Image 1 (cartoon, one colour):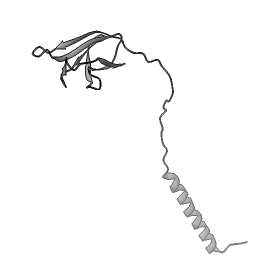
Image 2 (tube, helix red, strand yellow):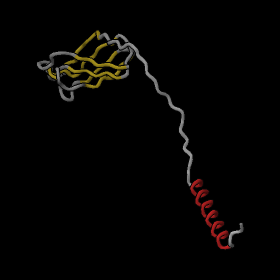
Image 3 (cartoon, helix red, strand yellow):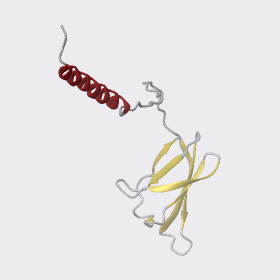
Image 4 (cartoon, one colour):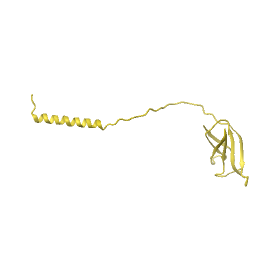
Amino acid sequence: MRYPPRRTKRFALAALVAGIVASSAYAFTASNTVPGTSSGSGAGAISGYTVSSIAYSLNASNPQNIDAVTFTLDKAATTVKAQLVGAGSWYSCSNTGGNNWSCATTSPQMTAATATQLTVVATQ
C-alpha cells in the first residue's frame, strides 16, 4: 500500500520535529557532581576538669574590686570561661601557659562582696 506523498511528508516532518525536541531536551539536561561525604555515629566519655591553685587579684586602688581570677586545670583546654556569681556574667579566660588560666573580671567589674561562687566551664 502506497501512501500519498503528502501524508509521507507530514509523517517525515513530524518525525523530524520529534527528533529535534528529544535531542534538545537531552542537550539541556546537566549532570551533577556530588562529592563523597561521611556520616557516622560514635560515643566517647566526657570527663570533667579539676580546678586548683585558685587566686583572686584585687584592685590596687580599691581592694573591694576583684580584677581577675587565676587557676590551673588538670589537663589541656582550648576555651575556658568563669563565673563568680550564680546567673551572673561569664568572663572569658586566657591561657597564661600550660594549663594555667587567667580571667579578667573588670567588665563588668566584680566585687568581693558580690562574688559567691566560682564556676568554671572548659572545653578541649
